[in-house]
Image 1 (spheres, rainbow, N blue to C red):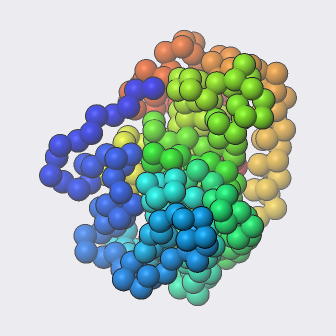
Image 2 (tube, rainbow, N blue to C red):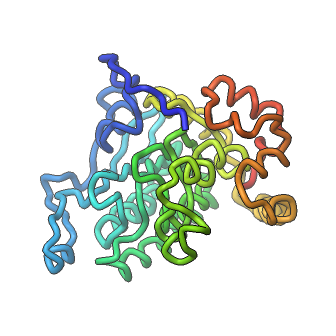
Length: 310
């Protein structure tokens, strides 16, 4: 995996998305000075469950929600903080995102942006977290049906796993970077259930080859690939808002047909490199080392990458 170097530029837009905190991503992503946080840390909206496990709490419960402008247009935003409990969903964490999405039905912004950085649901709040995942997915479906795009941005340390992976699948469009990973089951979960001979979670090359941003973009599991800078994510988000497909029966049928075709084509493949070869990549082993320009050039030559259904 060829990670982009951390920028030393003073321009906030040139910060590494992977290294930045949730608030730093939000502040630089939107138009300068436009972000307004809802339920900020000063309001002390914290998990009521973590003290029972002798675990520390965060005043924002690991998610920042609010509003801002992007290119002059109103957007609602939510950013998970992967450094707090791996960005995991709990009762308050999930409720803040559900509330934001439901508010968007009334506000009708140009889009809702979700900055994913999560390992899934907190085991300490499993029932509440799982309920929140279902409510979030329903709220996204309601928004998309009402014509409001929901754009997911994935490039943080924790990736987008578990319930986060399910939520990402309901978004209108997804932007992913080299550092992003998308999967319902994480590497450790697969290894625990199937053994290291099936999936070695310590094999970083295997993890990124199977779940990483390049693989997801190649097979159509993400819609845009961005450099590891806030500027690149901002530009990609603005572009994808305008490309969000309609949320109707035709889109769902196209997605189902595409998933069936993908299973027929790749169902017996044992490694991502075999999948890439079947896609028409001449040198699959070289894919992890491609920089963004060369990777974009590769995407332009492949038939599977452009689509309107995940």
